[in-house]
Length: 306
Image 1 (spheres, rainbow, N blue to C red):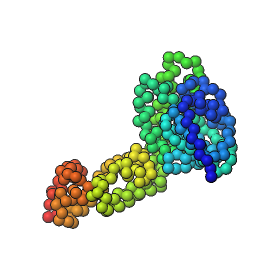
Image 2: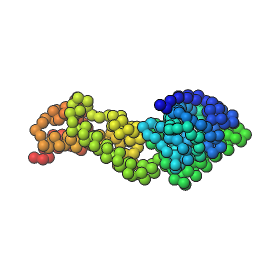
Image 3: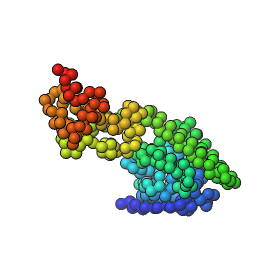
Image 4: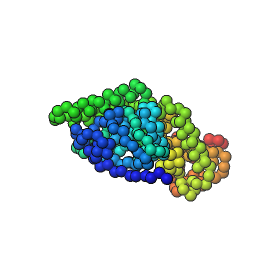
């Protein structure tokens, strides 16, 4: 059976040593051309944890990356984003020499200290949902990302002065913003996969609202829905916003209102009884939500059929 080893790499210098690279020119940031990396032999499963940010553009990589719930083959340009403390793995079925091309940007959190980027980098959702969805790039998009990484490399290789950090962080922000744009494009263009997720969402909500789960468990949470679809909450809401213009929470509420309208129009249950069956502890909360969504109170909606 293949063995699994866990390597925690705390610094960028340690990463360079791990990959048998020269000492980094800057201890807190490094751009690596993966074609220049000496190939290493791996005969087992390896799991890695970095204490720094990693932004990778990889292809032609004859192994599989275990990343969240999925495995990725790198036969086309793929970006993925790892924040400090995330675990990812490399799987090979037999002893092999890893070959790869592309670029890797490593940024230690200390480089961002006392700058607005220290806070804003955590708000880029792909550092959260990237464990479930890598970013597939077109040739043109690869050129943009590669150019920005090379700009960062050129800046820290030059003589460091009082402007260097601001210029590098500005380039990093531009890279992250382009990545966000490319993710939005991917949400639109990968229609088959995305609509499969949308169909699975509709089925999950239909099954949940048609069962007795509402009485015992209440309304499903965004976290529960996302877990059932094997994606993160942020990724699911971002995808739904692009496909439907509505968040996951809005989809849950839409299904709730649909069931409420059905009960109000086809049964003689009181509003309180319907609220209870739909998982509400207090009927007032149900009535308030119903009116917010329909501009009618539950009773006004029922009376409209008489």
